[in-house]
Image (cartoon, one colour):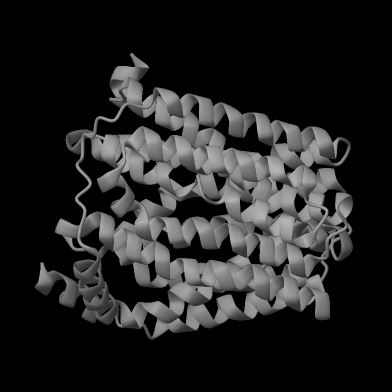
Length: 394
């Protein structure tokens, strides 16, 4: 009965399991494993850890830009299976990553298999049940990405090598399961010639110009914290690994719980002030955490961060949707992912570099300033003009 109610076929269930494994490992690797294992087991400094995380996002972003070309020339199963094999190879390399270049290369290779999963999901869902099926897959992504670092943190404190092999085994399972993906596409991915892509890209970027500063700033501000988060929790907040894990769990749970109510309120009252106040509260919570609060207040600010993110996410997605032409959904969202990828690639290197010069506390403080600037940016953002312009084009 549950399967019928969700309108999910065998293929979507299979993709959901693979997606869960992939995002579980990705969340665990980026938030916990790479920063903690790199620093405490391999004795790699935080600046190199930042470069490694950027390398991961770089390969992920590059692959997103060419995935349409690849899908036009190779089968779905081949692309996903090959991508996840390279991802598994990257994960296996971490055990030999005593040298900085091996550590960075392992992280880069790990990013290869991530992107194809979502694109393939788009080809497998049925149009009449698209919202239900994509909502289910989005939930799987969120749960996997959030659960990964929590589980990894619980294990890595006492058994760092065990945590590593768990991630390897899950990567292996995802790779094996990808053998059972069929090459049937419910939604055809249309390949657009590269020259035409460049033309469409330039036209889209002209319309997106007012949005670009906010997109790059917010992804930079968020990703610069990623390589320093475990070190910050230990050095500035004086948290044990258990307390840090609970902190992540609290913040993530609040995001999941508040996401649907905030989405409904955003639809009802408009996205502008949800973006403004969401980013403003996010900035204030980060600033407060950077000042070394008590344990109880750290949990309070983690809850505020979670709710703030839940307020921002639906409003942000609704704003982006105004720029996506109905006939070019894949390309439109691909452009956004690429632009956001610029901030994601800058952030970890910048965060790691600043932490090596100053402190992890200063990195969180600078991130709070960036999010404060983003809140001001959306106060003056021309929402009415954008909606009218987008509607006019449609």
